[in-house]
Length: 224
Image (tube, rainbow, N blue to C red):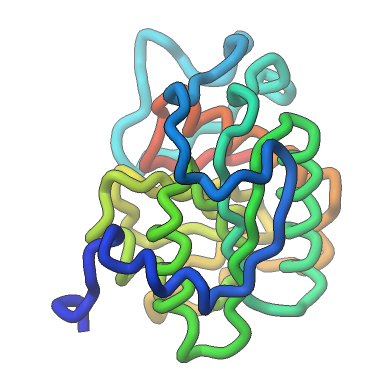
């Protein structure tokens, strides 16, 4: 199945089939040239130990609030890729939208509503060439594990779950009570839907985005 996946830039025509919702920022079609996005501000003490940067697939536990002074440059292009109507997923979606509004990111949404749409919608999101794809919904984890190794130039942030064996372009922001990993591993014994609060989801999005913006990718950012 992997061999049939097309390179991202050949999939532009498929974007029209995605469910897209305009967000914050300039609202252009993302086709115009622009300066390369950057991180604005700096990470605070305790986000990561500078003398011991995390290894691939490592888990870091940043000091609470150590990400507060760092944000993307304006009109950072973000695709929110989502699947599922459960309360946990809706909470994550709201957190991503609130963060995007706060930092004035240009947010678009791609929604998958049934299993046979998961891989095509991931491909649609990649074809849009965003700066970051943020995912919400456990149903996307196994399809992401299939697709993301083929698109190492595209950064992903998985919120409220993680891939069992992420490549360097996939960062997760997770906590006790979430931790769904897919690939037949089943639901974590500590999984707790009540842990998906607006406050915790918001911290996860902000901490995870801060990691991506500073090049700390391919890791798990633990926000308990």
